[in-house]
Image (cartoon, rainbow, N blue to C red):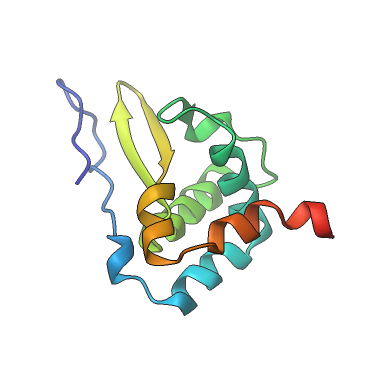
Length: 114
């Protein structure tokens, strides 16, 4: 589970799903949305814990972005933690790859074959 930083925030710490508890249908559903796919691709190209939620250039508002991150956490793809006023993200690539070998590789290189 993610921990809040000292001094905490007013919001609850995010709840994370272990990729081992995720079905392939849940994973595919999370990856099927274009906004979530963009988030995953950007996270894959960024160092871990460097991207705050607001740093993504996606065509949705804050509430929708929060929902998309919730879906990604629920699919075991993303881990989040609070650092001061920001919530930063990490792609759980190693854990997800152990559960679904090759799936993220296919998703991340999909632009090359389209």
